[in-house]
Picture 1: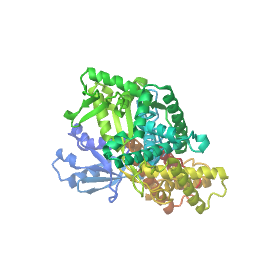
Picture 2: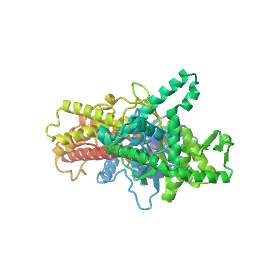
Picture 3: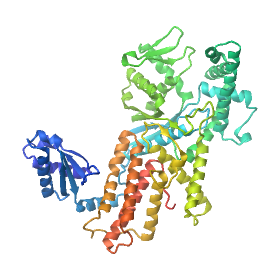
Picture 4: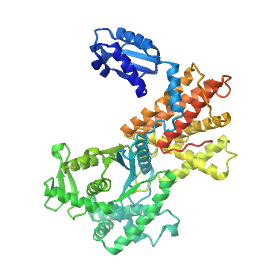
Length: 594
């Protein structure tokens, strides 16, 4: 419901409660009418009963009569217990549709120079392996949330922290030194991130062999895991890196460079981008400075072995390591430094969203609490966008064991499946081959993105590629196909309609489409407030279902009434535009032909 209609109806309710104006208007509660009842807007009567001594059905009936008599927007009503269901007039629907029809930015709030600035962090991969299906959910979720927040009128900075140092990076480096024989992306034909990931898996394989041999020689498994030569080499390499050993740094830069080039190619295929980058190698030292401050303020404490900790037991958590005994950093060190650096780089930052899986829920509770303890007022504006993991029908993915689904392989496979299904439809013969390939990729990405984003972020996903590429049902291709169908219809219709003002009454199917269109602005705002692309995805599915019902039950181009024909063309046109706008907020492109 628009704010104008909201205010108008509240004003009429004020007139009804003539002697309790100020009190009654605060108690007026609107909600969408439930599908099983006739009506467009429902007034909840119960909160109003404290102003009059009357049965809810009686009060609802009297208030409904008053609204029909007083407001030209309300055509009729019905009362179900304590709920007053209002049926809005055709004139209201037509006026509202006329208002939004020419609004190119309908539902989208333009960003101004003085708009609040929000930073959204997503992706944030390790430089020891390629992006996989789990990273895909992170990227698609973070990117979509950034687009939706921007659509609510905020200035958004898309950023990532690249985990480019640490023991996991050193494992790949050690394995490449020992087993790589000088391999490069050029010599192998592998993307750089895939080559480095190959040696991360190799490290784990050889490390397990060493542990098994030590156990065979009489060492306990727990001890063997600590003293295996390969792990000691990786730990030594990490210390050399932190000591700025030139040879170690040179190898690190070379292998990270391979990975960055590989990531860049994958991001381009996924259709995501970033405005800024932060690197753990540049922020972990800044984190150490924050730890020194915390020690001086007695917020942190040092144990006998030299490690630094924070005690959060009074807050219902536990003790948290901030700096190892050998002086090396942990993830918390880096995150403390990065948070402070971002505020320094963007002093007007009003909010920060971290897109990170729910296995890190505890980590972010600790991070935000530490920052508050240190006295940073901006800590209250930090938000962890926690999301569930992605499983496959075959089970959970494991990077070290090489059982992940590589992002590039998944994209290739889904594009091939989109091609197979599209060719079966046989409607692309007129397109040049390169445009057909672009369309297959567009359909594949629409399928992938919608399948992942339609699920509430907090829920775990069982991802089945075959289910996602379906031209029927709650899928991306179904929504894309509806858009393409409308564009074909509009092409047949010719020029856009100049006027549909002669229409006096509406078909119920026309009203249902309008009702869905009117919900777009509130859906954008709600999705932004809740950081939930799922709200937008499921709104689009409802809109597409409603439009298809309209399309199948009324004549559009064949209507003999010119005003009615123009209205239905305009209704189709606006639906296509809202589908395109909504899909853009999900990072999905919509083709004009399928």
